[in-house]
Image (cartoon, rainbow, N blue to C red; front, top):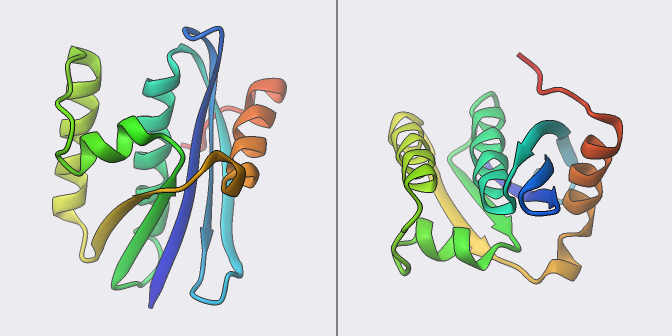
Length: 138
């Protein structure tokens, strides 16, 4: 089975109040899971990284062979795929956490760029998490 994840991180003010949203879909497009979380004060890039890791952690709960994650953050996609260097020490630490997690899972992880207009559902969830200050599930 293959899962498609759609992720978004939002920050109002950048830095400012931040949140994440992600959706997991099956191969037919059916929603397996959707979730948002309020992160508190942070940057948009930090929120994008957090959304990616949260999506992967939830995907691990499903038995799948491959997870293709779609993001409208060109920076995250190019950094994860090794096309851009990561200059921020905070983002370097977050990427190390992501890569460590990716190595620990039994499925293939692919991260692809999509235009923002094709990622509106994840964006809505991330912004709703900020609006309602929905804390992450523990």
